[in-house]
Length: 387
Length: 120
Image (cartoon, rainbow over the protein chains, first blue to last red):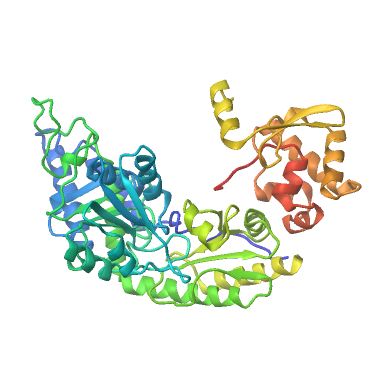
């Protein structure tokens, strides 16, 4: 039996853990000195907090290759951002093109409106290796299509989608492309203007290395999103009509400034360590893990061996074992935290043939090591031999 | 404690099946887990074990089942993975092989614990 002293954390696609010390220190420091309502009063502290928040909007806009920092909208997370976007874009009778690779953060809102007969939903399948064919997107678009919404990378398979090609198609056909960059932000460069992307939805708590509770949208100047939540913005208070200028058009109530400070520190951390180096290290470990798992008799790996482009996510199963049991054994006997189940992406598992029990997902983060991979492979070897 | 409306909604979502076991009516969910852990007793466990292919529950099986139940009834939740290992002195890998259906569908179900339903 392997003796373990600490948990080897491999659920970074859900939330990266631990966070860099710099992120936690910045959150405490900045919140201690500027933890007020930004831009809600004329006193200096409020103005300074607003200035600081605007600085983070600029930082995010630049990070995603956007063009207008005022069109950076803060939300709780990517699901919240996607709900704001989807509900603010759909019109009765419109069509929306998406894919079967999506997370429930996209599928559930779309399904909700589709079931109510408000929209028509066209879901594109993915190929055997987990990629959406851009030509399938082109074929699905028709004159009633309101927008295309795609994940940049599958949270189950890690496959990075050819969004630049999809963006070119959408641009040519005059249809906005919305990108869910939950799994890629902080690992891969995202160039929304260059790729023809009209909006990105992101979360702070994954590879951007920020805390939970902060995420957002970056919108291109050509995309307008209706307000679907209303309230105080600190502006135009005399009017009962919600502020229509960005970013407040899509932000109501006091924003999560501790989260914003943490997100900013996460972005600084990534920039100082160089994102390409962080990605390269995680990818090397993921390749080792993928290939190692693939060589174990009794372990089935579903992730492609096309390693580029890819984010460090590996899905597998142990023959004849419930994935949840395998995950519990990894945790209880070996101190390895991995995620079993459907990963909130039911259609991916349906198409892989792993539904309803799903699979075991290993997802790497910046603090995983070669030793972690050795221990996972040793554990999976032992577990597979126990059956 | 779960409210009545919440309990009804959960049962509608996860299914409900009443079966007669050793003369008693017991309500299970769609995956065969007890809705009410208090409907469990050792006779019922023996009968369910036999259905699952375990002709006899050994002392080791009973040690695991009793630990799972006692922990659940005292704490209102199932024990954590490491607590199971510490509390029973048996690795989860061994437990997987001891029960047909493994840890979740074998041990937890035979112990009469509600369906954990994590990420399903």
